[in-house]
Length: 269
Length: 103
Image (cartoon, rainbow over all chains, first blue to last red; front, top):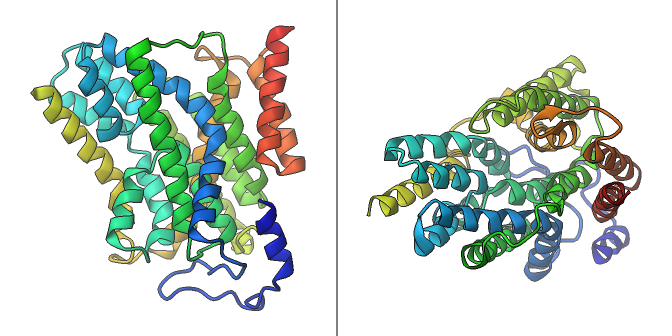
């Protein structure tokens, strides 16, 4: 954190007058000093740490629940690496236990993960220049909790030569924690007392990440609208309330943006 | 056997959803309006995950001063807005929640 700030102050930004853009893309290339691969990877890992406090108990509970559902140790564990999507795994384990038909399980998984289409769309411009193996790897790691720090870092710093290492650090930090906590849940059961409000670490960390980025009226409109709709639509099954809320927030932000004549266009500093 | 097939299919579906637009970007033209809309994905999605956690209690709206998560969330929002520091926000929010629960 500190080295980044000093680097930014020490090195005058030569591209200040007109930020260059990569061909065919509207994302400004960052003019500030680029951290090395290892530093970027560590920064991603560090940004992911607070989210892991909320994810680990979730993994424990999943492991215990999958065993209760009769999936067996191997399938319970491997679902965490084959599917690697918290909510979808809970629902799938539940449906397995109910003896639901394969098609129903697969459709449900698809609907529950529909929101990842939005993540994919919003990450895409930043990853466009990467080799296919990177796109495949980072797509596999693209979960709620890895998306949040990654996209905010990409928006804050723009494209750098090592941005993808930050995304990889965040994604692998989460992946490792998810596999480990699943294993603990399988072997020990859900050992954390339900009264410990560790799950609250997730929304609190998201607050710490998103609130400082709400620097224009359209961004505030997007956040407020999505928050209200998510609360009202909370009862919808399969996380559809989240999808509905996200779409309405995006619509509100875009409309406010157009109403302000695109004056909010400039990326927040 | 069926379980494994379903797991692998579920994994492929999940990966496909995450990979689809990352793969297609640059191969298909993205309209300017969509490009502009993409900027609002992070605040929209993250707020959609935050706000219900603060306002709902066991799935029921609890917009009252005796809702610990709402109070802790408001403290966190205030700290985040003034300090712009994620770690400080987390500490303030979790400490507030722990304090209220203890009292």
